Length: 140
Image 1 (cartoon, rainbow, N blue to C red):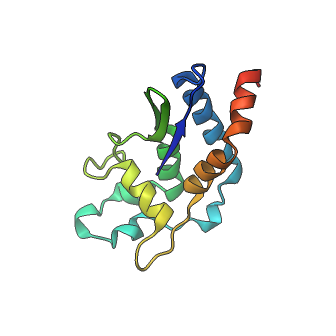
Image 2 (cartoon, one colour):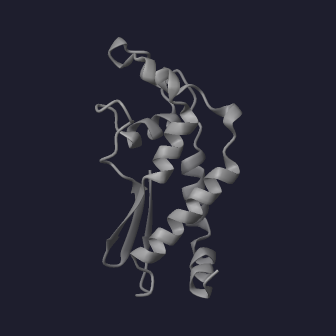
């Protein structure tokens, strides 16, 4: 799950990427429907090795928020890539990466349907990137 923006305008730098990350955060908060969320540990097929009291305290919403709050922007010449930081782990569980759990929640698995809120937002931004560039250039 990532957003790749190819550009020729030298004003579209990592600063634009970080501005766009703030927009993604805002859209997520506006659009999330908590009633559609399934407890995230169900996606792990309840493996005993992942069981802990901590799992019961952290919600699917929390996981998605951590993912959204850990979006990073890589600036490669001519291209910006926005993605969930692949080096971040679920708090308290050093074996489970945030981006992996967010992908499970987004796409689901063979027995559980996903909730693609993050993917939907990234796709919406990709479809309307010219409008976002215009807003950024106008200083909105």
